Each structure stands twice: as C-alpha cells, then as structure tokens.
Image (cartoon, rainbow, N blue to C red):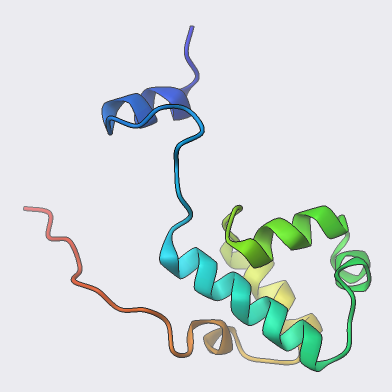
Length: 99
C-alpha cells in the first residue's frame, strides 16, 4: 500500500523522488546558512545547540527539509535574529487563489 506522501505526489502527477524544494524553503535555508556563517558557527555546533545532527542542519540550509515554525523560532533564538530575518528578500510570486 502506498504511503500518503506517495499518494499526494501521484495525485500531482509527480513520481516519487522528483519533488523540488519550494523556493521559499530554499531561501529560508540560505538565510540560516548566511547567519550561521556570519557568526563563524559550524553546522555541527548549530546542530548541537538545537539537538540536531549536522546533516539535518545541512538539509535545512539546502531547502531539502522544511523548517517547522517552532524549529524556526529556536533557530532565530540561537542565531540571535528575529524570525522575520529568514524571510527578508524572499522571492515573491502570485499567490494561488482557491475558490
């Protein structure tokens, strides 16, 4: 039996593994990386402060894994910025309308 994510991808006409990161997720991740590097902090050190592996930090920074609201709040605290910092200069586009 298929998992829900596979079913959702199939409904969108996508094959498993063909999903691309959302541009906003990529942007937020790049801002995490930017701030981390400004502070001279390694992915490993940031991961330790958040109870995560450096691999997970790497996935966040590349936009492969989405960052949840509570995790983004924690990142902001550790990196000494507001949550808004991660969205500055974010790409904009037309908002889809659901009627």
